[in-house]
Length: 357
Image (cartoon, rainbow, N blue to C red; front, side, top):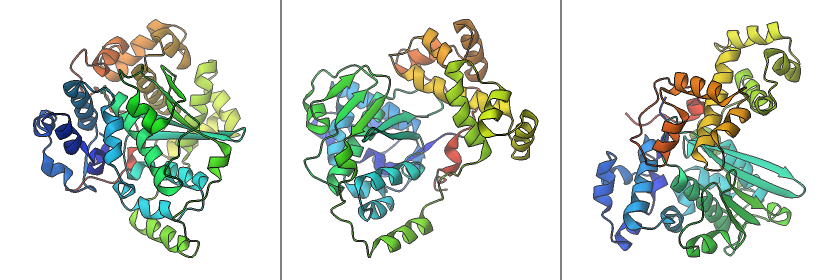
């Protein structure tokens, strides 16, 4: 299933293009969209054209910080109904957890990983388009939008403790410094924001405890329920942990989940899944992530995915996606025409609201 994203994801696109002397109508037409498609923020549209659109705008304008600049046009209301719930959360920690919980209701390509340790939290941005598209601008946009959300809810002059990006530095750091502060790292393993411990406990200035229960009731009534903890999801999490260790066997995964190999297979089958399907799907998602980051060589990716040799990884990848890892990476970088993979992977898009008829 192709992932979708809300039209509100492109808030500010026409305005920024105009300020930079770029024709937004022409760029939209190149990816099969029009200005009318952007008028209704809650309209769901295929997500891949968004990524290509933002990269084309960055190339056409000569501004590789295009998405960061575009985020400055965005308001909290761009998140739709979720913004009402965020306004009533008690503190920043609760805001981040709500964003992660309902990530699929404002964009169908985001997998935000939030971890907290040693008094800090780290929010990593991973994208799952299911086809090779340029992700740099989208990653930058999501990170910048997250900063904007915190500023709207906690403090206008807030900056993350640090910000890292999976791409190289922009030609001009001004917009990045204005948005993320001075503690910037480029060429990192992932695009991520770091939140200081005292910030996590910072109160939401718009919060009203007497209104919070009603806000939660409203969210539950208008937003689709986020994915639960189905067995396949739990198996996928364990598989992701064990793959780099070369220990991703049915027995090892079953041991982590407290299930015998036979019982694990049976329960997956009862849900219409299989162990091999989950392993392939997990490898597919991770391969897409690693190939979009320049930081990882194909040899490193093969090791991270639990393959004995890069050649084995290449053969598996071609079987899954109908092209080699090098061809996929070239397409992401704009060095080849992107195509939709031959095999549709199992994804978490089931939680994404269906686009309007």
